[in-house]
Length: 406
Image (tube, rainbow, N blue to C red; front, side, top):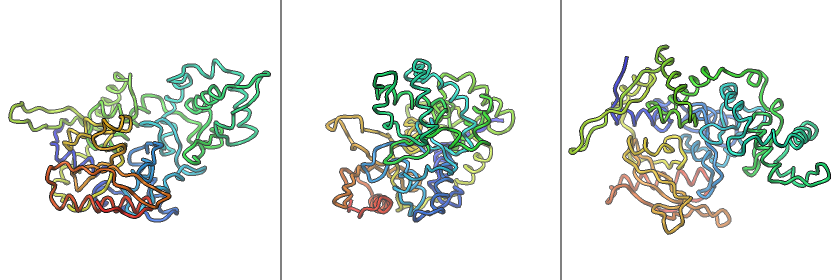
């Protein structure tokens, strides 16, 4: 069995699966106010949908990306509350997902193959093997002292000389990547570590999935968040690079089980180009959902701001294909070279990306500044301006600052 989907259906399906259209369609909560268990459970539901919540340290718009992603799905959610989601006993853990992410606890056994591979650190090589005495001493400190910050190892003495803080931090990071220690919480966005057996429940810690089963689980979870996706997008979701033969085999097994079907995206040509299709994958239930969603009329006039690292946006080629929107992250560019701003937030209205706004929070002055505002249309209609106003108001409310006038 194979299928075909057009761009409007794929775009709307992507937003439904991402939790950015009506809750009746997304099956995710609409609101989550306050700082209590209900808001926490709603956040967990959003994270469960994607399988990860990407972390980033930049709070310039009033909150970091993990808070912005949740606030864009959950009306009334305090984006700053996201900082406290990772706690001992909560069904989340921190590890390498798409990037450094918070992930549902049930994925801990799934990522066992990655922890085994990262026994040799992907950037620094065999840090643990080359520093066995430091590694053993650091593990002993966790055993006797409990949770520790990497800075707690500054000035630690070994064999009559002072450890290099740089080496100690690398060892701690390598111990985390290899699964010997876990992040138990963050304070001021800084990691606090403890031994894995004190953080991860035994039913998750004591089993690892075979890599074949793990890849199948990750591919299905990626499709849960995307709806329709190409193989390269599925690979990039979990950074499964250099595994293409294994990925192709896993996709074929899932196809044989009826979990997924091949699905070509029909791309309408320009007058000067031939018609083409792009191969991809979809879950059968989402193919049906995409067809039913044809009659869905997203509400115009209401807008929402998205983090530049939102799961809908990080695949820039996909964003261009589905939305006709050139997603741009300019934090690494010198200011004179920026077109839209340091940390511009795309604006979603219905199923269209209509522009972007660069915001800066001034906490001491209790002010949210609009650094720049750009619409996709040269002469944006009033409904786009109204959507932008409402989106900025919602964002300001989520970060606890007065809304500026666009």
